[in-house]
Image (cartoon, rainbow, N blue to C red; front, side):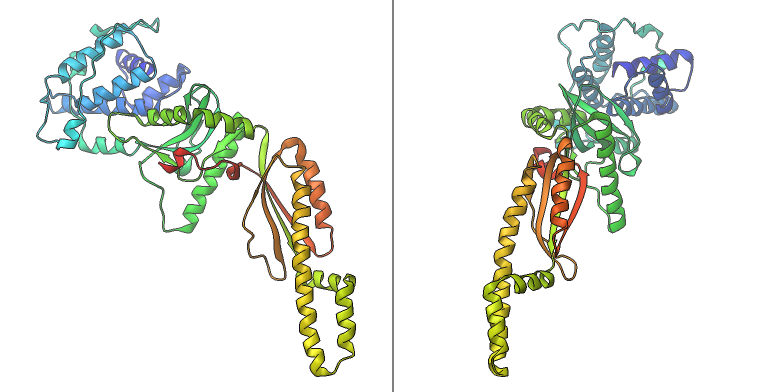
Amino acid sequence: MEDIFYAVLALHIAGKPINKENIIAVLNAAGTSINEAALDAMVTFIESLKEAQKKKEKRHVDPRIVEFIASELLQQKTQTKQLEALLKEITKSAETVEETPASLGPEAQSQIGTPVVEEEMPAASSRVYDKEAVREEDRAIAEVPAEEAGAVSQTKGRYVYGVVAGKETVNLGKIGIEGNEVYTIPYQDLCAIVHNCPPEPYQSQDDETIKGWVKIHQNVLDEVKSRFGTVIPLGFDTILQPKDDLTSPNQIVQDWLKEDYDRLNALLEKLKNKDEYGIQVFYEPQVISEIILQQSEEIKKIKEEMATKSPGLAYMYKQKLERAVKAEMERLAEKWFKDFYANIKKHADDIVVEKTKKAEKGKVMLLNLSCLVSKEKVETLGEELDKINNMEGFSVRFTGPWPPYSFVTELPAEKR
């Protein structure tokens, strides 16, 4: 937040237009990371001042803006005497506002407050803020227009893609859903990967649109993995939002990271250098039946007896033969499942048994597994699956690597 104040001051002194694009240009030139929430709040505040100047009005600032700026300053530990003096000036002006404006309902009135910075804050920067250099008209205080307040509310949510290890705020560019800018929000040595969004789910009647969103979600996780390594993936449409107007959206994300810190760290350790792979094993009943008829002595005997019987009795023996083949196939399927599972498990760090699905015509799905596999074990796992795939009547589908969704049980963030 401090950097944004200085960027605005630099533009003012240089006589350049003070707008979002120019503020970003100054911050980029200084090599400073951008806090989108704080930037949006500052731009809204500046635009409201300009509007007031055009109308030649001198109106008081909504104290909620002061509260937001103060919370952002405290959150980022931006502690300078000069900024404290600025806040006190704004606060002093805000205190003259009526405590319960008629235009606000009881619920909104209860959220209005004036921040008070009681302790002296040590300087955290060698840069000096010269408040005397600020023009008097730049101190005009105005309310945020309704349309601008609506624009701010459109970014009160934080769409969370996943969590990685890290301590810095990093901008990943406009790679998110609907071209949103993706960045990290750090807490200690954890970072949430997010973009700003409205505080509501992504919804569409068009299936292709939804598929596109899901694909972008996956692409972001792939990019994050390439840059940070291990990532804890969250499900599509995981959105965090403040429960009130006094808490910044970024703070809500940090509160979640703090609340679930131990569990997230344990998950990162478990998933380190591992990926998820899907394994599905199929068999063809018709082929397996022929093998059973050739190998089972009991079934061979039934078949031989059937050949000596009259047509009426032969029909009954045929039914008996079919039941015997079916029973033998079920027995073998249970054995295959145990054997295949045990052999696959040797090459996996963890396995989740998924529900079997309807297979293509002429095949039955025997196993449907999600496997967490270390990078060094992938090759030996592939060799084991080749053995199964080469068995007569069997086939294997091996997919991946994927983000390890199956090994990330529902996190508190996904319930909010």
